[in-house]
Length: 65
Image 1 (spheres, rainbow, N blue to C red):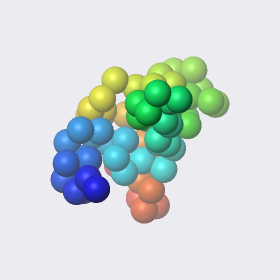
Image 2: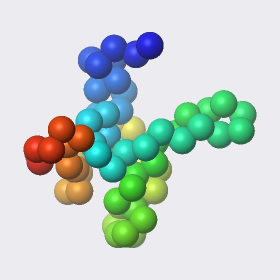
Image 3: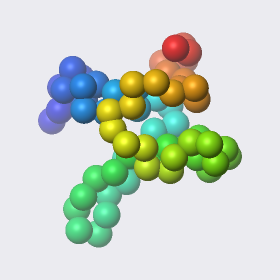
Image 4: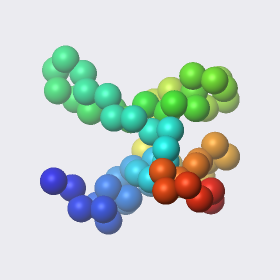
């Protein structure tokens, strides 16, 4: 299991964003899907990680950065 600090470094803001979803391919690879991309094409569907700035970030804990 990944520790919070490791995940934060690898994923950046996406690690704590309510719109980020992990997607597993048939071959077992994992990707991070940005849910914001479904409503706004300005956001990449699969962002390049780690994401260090994002205008659409919303914390999965309810606060915004």
